[in-house]
Length: 151
Image 1: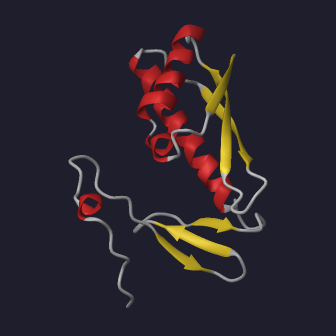
Image 2 (image 1 turned 30 degrees about the vertical axis):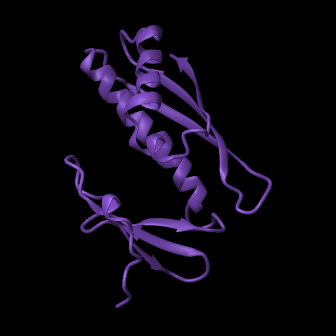
């Protein structure tokens, strides 16, 4: 068993909130990795994006999913439940190595009886700028923009 890299003590102090996120990654050949959490289904991540999304696709997808979960929850609390929600997520990447994500655009399409545009926009804004832990884990200088199509 290998020793973990050491981290400054303040980084290892548990925060009073959710427990640490822990997943296992198993190499499955080529650039295919199997990502799982104890007792949960396997997420297939593929550097060539053939057997599953690439690592960067997964990152952008995690951002979109995190924001979408918040939006559904916020609108449900307003007693205007979402009937359907889709997010088309785009991550622009640097033309350098590493080709990091430099900008993300989340295009939300939401439908539901009684959902007003002002409330849907507020829910998205709150998610992207306040509640989404994935967004808050990314470079704060990286712009995350969004659009809304309300049906």
